[in-house]
Image (cartoon, rainbow, N blue to C red; front, side, top):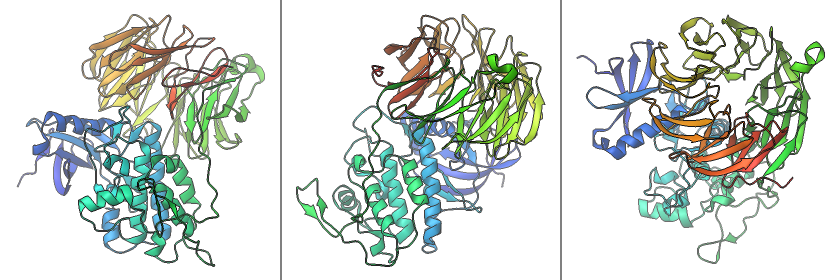
Length: 640
């Protein structure tokens, strides 16, 4: 019997399972000649609401790039109207299946949960919430890695206070969701606590209750400590579960990174000696106290949670790099030839690293390349012709690689390889651990565009007016596209389309597989800003002093917002707001749907740095030699 083929490309081979969103099949990709997983929307969900949810899943998951999150390859609508989503085929078995075979070793449980927390942190950093974390959505690969599988009901964190409906699996659902509130990233931490509890004990925190009783327990009842079901567990695990399963979101850990780090250092078993004495804790709903539930050991000190406030930090040179904000630290470069690590809460320097000087000192003082932080290492280029790998905690160099000219391109790190361009007309692929070259590709002009790596292909622009698609493993060209001007804009790849700007006043949408143009849009000035694509809209700046919002499928303008000068900064879109800088010395926050300004913050210099928004703070640099931390809701800055 002939197998069904989706979109003339994906031959369905084996049904993996059915869920609330649809069916998942193993399929063979006839173009790439590889196995993939294909999700089909259930017929009964073929409503406008169901389709919106399906495409939101794809677009949300497609923005995430992390080894612990399943990769989205493609999506679309088949000829018969069926909606489909194509993902990497992850071998292994989900943790619900693993649990069905018996309790796993505690050490394995801690390792799996640590990996899941790290992946959640990557999603939360870009304001994406999973909202349905459970063992069935955590795939254990043969190599022992864990991947989060279904961002099927993930959404960008809403500014609303009440949810329109409850979506998810009740056994792992946080109390605030059951009470009708939207919730935020701390809801994922509660669900992760439920998963950890089940992996440790073989049962969910409240056992096999019927749905109404289970909902009541989530909201009102403290669960028994996991050590009561599995003697010998460390009291520190009990303590961590207290926080993860706290009824009030504010009582949970500050971030998934905090959970990850604590899991990494937790002992698997209890040390010799008497167990900690349970103590009563307030019952905030009934006005009394409860005893015998999950309790922290009395000796455990409470950790103060950071309070993010606006601040500014002054460097010695203009700041045009895009900040990287990771684990409470802001990493940024400056024209003063330094890389800075600043405390994200206060702006206090944690360390600075000075790049080389010498003959090139006057020009090489520029650190224009934006840092990227991966696995505790800061990767950044410099005008002194070097790529640096610095220890994120101390700034100590781990290695440097010397190119033939300035490195103004910002590095991209994927699967242990650093991809970066140089003014020596080359694209480099370097080993992330050692800096050893894996390959180089020579373009026809400077490479100041930052590479984008998707599905084994490196997309990058050059001053020879071309966009290149290179094999990520070998550097072999797959295609090139000739634009009408310099391509210093960094490509953005979403849903099989490459979006990129050019100095010839155009924005291009190119087929990611072939480089064939899908559409072009002409602005009134050069486009050196890199496009940002969110929910079917492209946001991009132009030297004509405008920010454009274009339909991703057609290039038709949705709105334009005019600033006082050229816009070289790349927009950042968070919670329905577009944040962008301009050469008129201002930072703008405009409504993503209409382009209407919400606030404007004035700096003392041109703003070519691209903003980064984390925990309600906008981090951005300016030519006035300052790094700003500005309140994302109001644009308020410190008085200094």
